[in-house]
Amino acid sequence: MIAVYPGSFDPLHNGHVDVIERAAAIFDTVLVVVFANAGKKPLFDAPTRVQLVRQSINRPNVEVEEGSGLLVDYAHRRGARVIIRGLRAVLDFDYEFQFALMNKRMAPDIETIFMLTGEKYSYLSSTLIKELAGYRADIASLVPQAVAQRLDYHFQ
Ligand code: ADP
Image (cartoon, rainbow, N blue to C red):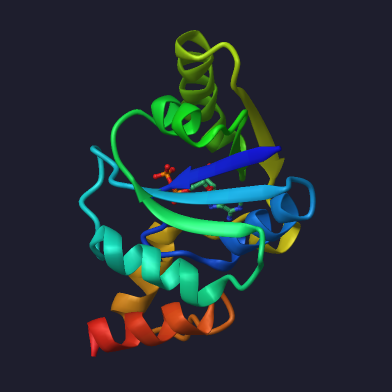
C-alpha cells in the first residue's frame, strides 16, 4: 500500500517528521511530495525543500520528490491509494475537510487519512519556525539538524 504525504514543507519540522515516521510504520511506501502552494510565497525553493527532507529522513520505504499539478493525478500516476494529512488543532480542520472532500470528489478511489499531531508538536508550524529563525531564536529542538543549519545560513 502506497501513501502520499503532500505538503509545502517550507521548511520541514519535527511535527512533519513525526507524521512521516508513523506513516512509514504503517504503509509499505510513503511518498513525501513537496508541492508549490499557490497561496504561499515560499522561503525556500522546491528543490531545496526536497533536499532538506531527504537529508532529514533516512528510511528505506520513504521517498521524497517534487510534485506539480493536481495531487490526485500524482497519486494515480504513482499507484497511491492513500493521502496522508496531519491535523494539529481545530484550526486545521476546515481547510483539511474541504481539501479532502474535493479530492474525494475528483478521485473516489483515493482515501485521505488524517494523523493527529504528536502531542509534543501540536504547536509547531513552518510559519512559526521561519518567524523564530528570522529573530535568530534557538530552533534546534524543533527541526531536523539539516533544516536548522539551512535556516541559520539563510538568516545570518
Ligand atoms: P500545506 O501547505 O499543504 O498545508 P504543510 O507543509 O504546512 O503543507 O503541512 C503538510 C501537512 O502536515 C499538512 O497536512 C499539515 O496539516 C501537517 N502538519 C503541519 N504541521 C504539523 C504538526 N505540527 N503536526 C502534525 N501535522 C502537521
